[in-house]
Image 1 (tube, rainbow, N blue to C red):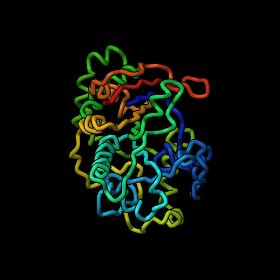
Image 2: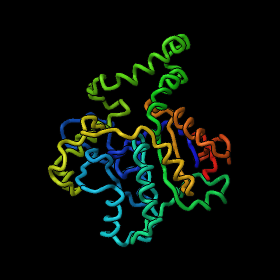
Image 3: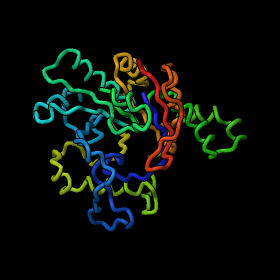
Length: 313
Protein backbone atom coordinates (compact mmCIF):
# COMPACT_ATOMS: atom_id res chain seq x y z
CA UNK A 1 0.00 0.00 0.00
CA UNK A 2 1.16 3.50 -0.77
CA UNK A 3 -0.26 6.68 0.72
CA UNK A 4 0.22 10.06 -0.86
CA UNK A 5 -0.74 13.38 0.71
CA UNK A 6 -1.23 16.04 -1.93
CA UNK A 7 -1.30 19.79 -1.77
CA UNK A 8 -4.53 21.32 -3.15
CA UNK A 9 -4.79 21.80 -6.89
CA UNK A 10 -7.63 23.09 -9.04
CA UNK A 11 -9.15 20.36 -11.18
CA UNK A 12 -12.61 21.63 -12.29
CA UNK A 13 -13.39 18.51 -14.29
CA UNK A 14 -16.66 17.13 -15.57
CA UNK A 15 -18.90 15.52 -12.94
CA UNK A 16 -16.20 13.93 -10.77
CA UNK A 17 -13.81 16.91 -11.08
CA UNK A 18 -10.68 14.77 -10.91
CA UNK A 19 -9.89 12.61 -13.89
CA UNK A 20 -12.48 13.11 -16.62
CA UNK A 21 -11.78 14.59 -20.06
CA UNK A 22 -13.66 17.87 -19.65
CA UNK A 23 -13.24 21.15 -17.79
CA UNK A 24 -15.52 24.17 -17.84
CA UNK A 25 -14.68 27.73 -18.76
CA UNK A 26 -15.01 29.38 -15.35
CA UNK A 27 -13.70 32.92 -15.89
CA UNK A 28 -17.08 34.33 -17.03
CA UNK A 29 -20.39 34.49 -15.18
CA UNK A 30 -23.16 32.15 -16.30
CA UNK A 31 -25.53 34.00 -18.68
CA UNK A 32 -28.20 31.38 -19.29
CA UNK A 33 -26.55 29.69 -22.26
CA UNK A 34 -24.90 26.27 -22.26
CA UNK A 35 -21.62 26.45 -20.27
CA UNK A 36 -18.49 26.09 -22.36
CA UNK A 37 -16.73 22.75 -21.97
CA UNK A 38 -12.95 22.57 -22.42
CA UNK A 39 -10.55 19.65 -22.71
CA UNK A 40 -8.89 18.77 -19.42
CA UNK A 41 -5.11 18.63 -20.00
CA UNK A 42 -4.72 16.37 -16.94
CA UNK A 43 -7.36 13.81 -17.92
CA UNK A 44 -6.65 10.14 -17.21
CA UNK A 45 -8.23 9.32 -20.58
CA UNK A 46 -4.88 10.15 -22.19
CA UNK A 47 -3.60 6.76 -21.06
CA UNK A 48 -6.74 4.73 -20.32
CA UNK A 49 -10.44 4.28 -21.02
CA UNK A 50 -12.69 5.31 -18.14
CA UNK A 51 -15.69 3.19 -17.15
CA UNK A 52 -17.66 5.11 -14.52
CA UNK A 53 -20.13 3.27 -12.32
CA UNK A 54 -22.80 5.03 -10.27
CA UNK A 55 -22.90 3.73 -6.73
CA UNK A 56 -25.40 3.86 -5.19
CA UNK A 57 -27.97 3.87 -8.00
CA UNK A 58 -29.30 7.39 -8.42
CA UNK A 59 -26.03 9.25 -7.96
CA UNK A 60 -25.80 9.40 -11.74
CA UNK A 61 -28.08 8.27 -14.54
CA UNK A 62 -28.18 4.65 -13.41
CA UNK A 63 -30.93 2.27 -14.36
CA UNK A 64 -29.20 -1.10 -13.98
CA UNK A 65 -31.03 -3.82 -12.08
CA UNK A 66 -27.99 -5.92 -11.10
CA UNK A 67 -24.89 -5.21 -9.06
CA UNK A 68 -21.91 -3.25 -10.32
CA UNK A 69 -19.62 -6.27 -10.67
CA UNK A 70 -22.13 -7.99 -12.97
CA UNK A 71 -22.59 -4.72 -14.84
CA UNK A 72 -18.84 -4.51 -15.47
CA UNK A 73 -18.85 -8.09 -16.74
CA UNK A 74 -21.74 -7.39 -19.13
CA UNK A 75 -19.96 -4.30 -20.47
CA UNK A 76 -16.88 -6.39 -21.23
CA UNK A 77 -19.01 -8.99 -22.98
CA UNK A 78 -20.48 -6.22 -25.15
CA UNK A 79 -17.00 -4.75 -25.84
CA UNK A 80 -14.70 -7.79 -26.25
CA UNK A 81 -11.86 -5.69 -27.66
CA UNK A 82 -11.15 -4.56 -24.09
CA UNK A 83 -10.94 -8.08 -22.67
CA UNK A 84 -7.14 -8.19 -22.86
CA UNK A 85 -6.71 -4.80 -21.16
CA UNK A 86 -5.71 -4.60 -17.49
CA UNK A 87 -8.21 -2.89 -15.21
CA UNK A 88 -7.46 -0.33 -12.52
CA UNK A 89 -10.41 0.29 -10.19
CA UNK A 90 -10.56 3.66 -8.47
CA UNK A 91 -12.87 5.86 -6.46
CA UNK A 92 -12.91 8.80 -4.09
CA UNK A 93 -14.70 10.23 -1.08
CA UNK A 94 -17.81 8.17 -0.18
CA UNK A 95 -16.62 5.49 -2.61
CA UNK A 96 -14.12 4.57 0.10
CA UNK A 97 -16.97 2.60 1.69
CA UNK A 98 -18.37 0.97 -1.45
CA UNK A 99 -15.37 0.47 -3.75
CA UNK A 100 -13.44 -2.08 -1.61
CA UNK A 101 -16.61 -4.20 -1.62
CA UNK A 102 -16.75 -4.01 -5.43
CA UNK A 103 -13.08 -4.97 -5.68
CA UNK A 104 -13.68 -7.95 -3.40
CA UNK A 105 -16.69 -9.04 -5.50
CA UNK A 106 -14.56 -8.88 -8.65
CA UNK A 107 -11.72 -10.75 -6.95
CA UNK A 108 -14.13 -13.54 -6.01
CA UNK A 109 -15.05 -13.75 -9.69
CA UNK A 110 -11.40 -14.16 -10.57
CA UNK A 111 -10.93 -16.94 -8.02
CA UNK A 112 -14.09 -18.69 -9.24
CA UNK A 113 -12.62 -18.65 -12.77
CA UNK A 114 -15.43 -16.67 -14.35
CA UNK A 115 -15.77 -16.93 -18.11
CA UNK A 116 -14.48 -13.35 -18.17
CA UNK A 117 -11.48 -12.52 -16.01
CA UNK A 118 -11.01 -8.93 -14.90
CA UNK A 119 -7.33 -8.32 -14.18
CA UNK A 120 -6.97 -5.74 -11.44
CA UNK A 121 -3.92 -3.62 -12.13
CA UNK A 122 -2.18 -1.30 -9.71
CA UNK A 123 -1.94 2.31 -10.99
CA UNK A 124 1.05 2.27 -13.32
CA UNK A 125 1.82 5.99 -13.32
CA UNK A 126 2.76 6.28 -9.64
CA UNK A 127 6.10 7.86 -8.77
CA UNK A 128 8.85 5.37 -9.65
CA UNK A 129 11.85 7.53 -8.81
CA UNK A 130 12.44 5.39 -5.74
CA UNK A 131 11.92 1.68 -5.12
CA UNK A 132 11.60 1.20 -8.87
CA UNK A 133 11.90 -2.58 -8.76
CA UNK A 134 9.12 -2.94 -6.20
CA UNK A 135 6.75 -0.69 -8.14
CA UNK A 136 7.36 -2.60 -11.36
CA UNK A 137 6.50 -5.86 -9.64
CA UNK A 138 3.05 -4.63 -8.59
CA UNK A 139 0.52 -6.53 -10.65
CA UNK A 140 -2.96 -5.79 -9.32
CA UNK A 141 -4.80 -3.46 -7.02
CA UNK A 142 -6.98 -0.39 -6.72
CA UNK A 143 -6.79 3.33 -6.03
CA UNK A 144 -8.72 5.50 -3.57
CA UNK A 145 -8.71 9.26 -3.06
CA UNK A 146 -9.69 10.88 0.25
CA UNK A 147 -11.63 7.69 0.98
CA UNK A 148 -14.31 7.54 3.63
CA UNK A 149 -13.41 4.32 5.44
CA UNK A 150 -14.55 4.35 9.09
CA UNK A 151 -17.44 6.77 9.65
CA UNK A 152 -16.89 7.35 13.35
CA UNK A 153 -13.17 7.90 12.86
CA UNK A 154 -13.66 10.50 10.14
CA UNK A 155 -16.16 12.40 12.28
CA UNK A 156 -14.00 12.31 15.40
CA UNK A 157 -10.96 13.72 13.59
CA UNK A 158 -12.70 16.64 11.89
CA UNK A 159 -12.24 18.99 14.84
CA UNK A 160 -8.57 18.03 15.41
CA UNK A 161 -8.06 18.69 11.69
CA UNK A 162 -9.67 22.14 11.95
CA UNK A 163 -7.45 22.89 14.92
CA UNK A 164 -4.35 21.62 13.14
CA UNK A 165 -5.11 23.88 10.16
CA UNK A 166 -5.23 26.87 12.58
CA UNK A 167 -8.92 27.53 11.89
CA UNK A 168 -9.80 27.52 15.59
CA UNK A 169 -7.72 28.57 18.58
CA UNK A 170 -6.01 26.27 21.07
CA UNK A 171 -8.38 27.48 23.79
CA UNK A 172 -11.52 26.79 21.76
CA UNK A 173 -10.23 23.37 20.75
CA UNK A 174 -9.34 22.37 24.30
CA UNK A 175 -12.69 23.46 25.74
CA UNK A 176 -15.14 22.46 22.99
CA UNK A 177 -13.37 19.97 20.72
CA UNK A 178 -15.10 16.84 22.03
CA UNK A 179 -18.47 18.58 22.27
CA UNK A 180 -18.24 19.81 18.68
CA UNK A 181 -17.35 16.36 17.38
CA UNK A 182 -20.29 14.75 19.15
CA UNK A 183 -22.67 17.48 17.98
CA UNK A 184 -21.61 17.13 14.34
CA UNK A 185 -22.05 13.38 14.58
CA UNK A 186 -25.54 13.57 16.08
CA UNK A 187 -26.98 16.56 14.19
CA UNK A 188 -25.31 16.55 10.77
CA UNK A 189 -28.65 15.94 9.01
CA UNK A 190 -30.13 19.13 10.51
CA UNK A 191 -27.85 21.50 8.62
CA UNK A 192 -29.45 22.95 5.47
CA UNK A 193 -27.95 21.87 2.15
CA UNK A 194 -29.07 25.00 0.32
CA UNK A 195 -26.41 27.67 -0.22
CA UNK A 196 -26.26 30.81 -2.36
CA UNK A 197 -24.91 30.11 -5.87
CA UNK A 198 -21.11 30.48 -6.10
CA UNK A 199 -19.57 33.26 -8.17
CA UNK A 200 -16.82 32.90 -10.81
CA UNK A 201 -14.13 33.78 -8.28
CA UNK A 202 -15.16 30.80 -6.13
CA UNK A 203 -13.30 27.50 -6.42
CA UNK A 204 -16.54 25.51 -6.71
CA UNK A 205 -18.08 27.66 -9.44
CA UNK A 206 -17.52 24.80 -11.89
CA UNK A 207 -19.89 22.66 -9.78
CA UNK A 208 -22.70 25.07 -10.63
CA UNK A 209 -21.76 25.02 -14.32
CA UNK A 210 -21.76 21.22 -14.32
CA UNK A 211 -25.37 21.27 -13.07
CA UNK A 212 -26.50 23.52 -15.93
CA UNK A 213 -24.46 21.52 -18.45
CA UNK A 214 -25.42 17.92 -17.68
CA UNK A 215 -29.11 18.76 -17.19
CA UNK A 216 -29.25 20.18 -20.71
CA UNK A 217 -31.36 18.00 -23.04
CA UNK A 218 -28.87 18.22 -25.92
CA UNK A 219 -25.96 17.18 -23.67
CA UNK A 220 -27.91 14.22 -22.30
CA UNK A 221 -28.83 13.16 -25.82
CA UNK A 222 -25.16 13.32 -26.88
CA UNK A 223 -24.24 11.03 -23.96
CA UNK A 224 -27.03 8.56 -24.78
CA UNK A 225 -28.58 9.08 -21.36
CA UNK A 226 -31.89 7.28 -21.08
CA UNK A 227 -34.54 9.97 -20.81
CA UNK A 228 -36.34 9.89 -17.50
CA UNK A 229 -33.83 7.61 -15.77
CA UNK A 230 -33.67 10.20 -13.01
CA UNK A 231 -34.99 13.71 -12.61
CA UNK A 232 -32.43 16.48 -12.46
CA UNK A 233 -28.86 15.44 -11.80
CA UNK A 234 -27.32 16.79 -8.59
CA UNK A 235 -23.63 16.63 -7.74
CA UNK A 236 -24.42 15.64 -4.16
CA UNK A 237 -27.91 14.21 -3.90
CA UNK A 238 -28.69 13.71 -0.23
CA UNK A 239 -32.36 12.89 -0.87
CA UNK A 240 -31.72 9.43 -2.34
CA UNK A 241 -33.72 6.58 -0.76
CA UNK A 242 -30.50 5.00 0.43
CA UNK A 243 -29.87 2.97 3.58
CA UNK A 244 -26.34 3.40 4.89
CA UNK A 245 -25.71 -0.05 6.29
CA UNK A 246 -21.92 0.03 5.91
CA UNK A 247 -20.11 2.06 8.53
CA UNK A 248 -16.62 0.75 7.81
CA UNK A 249 -14.75 -0.79 4.89
CA UNK A 250 -11.64 -1.44 6.97
CA UNK A 251 -12.09 -5.22 7.03
CA UNK A 252 -12.30 -5.29 3.23
CA UNK A 253 -8.88 -3.65 3.09
CA UNK A 254 -7.59 -6.34 5.43
CA UNK A 255 -9.10 -9.10 3.27
CA UNK A 256 -7.84 -7.71 -0.03
CA UNK A 257 -4.31 -6.99 1.18
CA UNK A 258 -4.07 -10.48 2.70
CA UNK A 259 -4.84 -11.88 -0.76
CA UNK A 260 -2.12 -9.84 -2.42
CA UNK A 261 -4.04 -6.85 -3.75
CA UNK A 262 -2.15 -3.56 -3.58
CA UNK A 263 -3.69 -0.14 -3.10
CA UNK A 264 -2.75 3.46 -3.69
CA UNK A 265 -4.47 5.83 -1.25
CA UNK A 266 -4.08 9.56 -1.80
CA UNK A 267 -5.37 12.45 0.30
CA UNK A 268 -5.57 16.15 -0.36
CA UNK A 269 -4.74 18.25 2.68
CA UNK A 270 -7.81 20.52 2.37
CA UNK A 271 -10.61 17.99 2.85
CA UNK A 272 -12.41 18.63 6.14
CA UNK A 273 -14.95 15.81 5.66
CA UNK A 274 -12.51 12.95 5.08
CA UNK A 275 -9.35 14.33 6.62
CA UNK A 276 -5.88 12.99 5.96
CA UNK A 277 -5.65 12.44 9.74
CA UNK A 278 -8.36 9.77 9.52
CA UNK A 279 -6.78 8.15 6.46
CA UNK A 280 -3.40 7.97 8.18
CA UNK A 281 -5.00 6.52 11.30
CA UNK A 282 -6.75 3.55 9.65
CA UNK A 283 -3.73 2.80 7.45
CA UNK A 284 -1.53 2.68 10.56
CA UNK A 285 -4.13 0.44 12.21
CA UNK A 286 -3.45 -2.19 9.52
CA UNK A 287 -0.13 -2.63 11.35
CA UNK A 288 1.89 -3.57 8.27
CA UNK A 289 5.62 -3.12 8.03
CA UNK A 290 7.00 0.13 6.68
CA UNK A 291 8.83 0.04 3.34
CA UNK A 292 9.41 3.72 2.65
CA UNK A 293 8.88 6.37 5.35
CA UNK A 294 7.46 9.84 4.80
CA UNK A 295 9.41 11.61 2.09
CA UNK A 296 8.70 14.41 -0.39
CA UNK A 297 6.76 13.41 -3.50
CA UNK A 298 8.32 15.36 -6.35
CA UNK A 299 6.63 16.54 -9.53
CA UNK A 300 8.55 18.51 -12.15
CA UNK A 301 11.26 19.28 -9.62
CA UNK A 302 8.88 20.63 -6.97
CA UNK A 303 7.40 19.15 -3.81
CA UNK A 304 3.78 18.19 -4.59
CA UNK A 305 3.12 16.33 -1.35
CA UNK A 306 4.45 13.50 0.80
CA UNK A 307 4.43 9.74 0.37
CA UNK A 308 4.96 6.58 2.39
CA UNK A 309 4.79 2.92 1.40
CA UNK A 310 4.02 -0.17 3.50
CA UNK A 311 3.90 -3.90 2.87
CA UNK A 312 0.30 -5.13 2.77
CA UNK A 313 0.94 -8.84 3.00
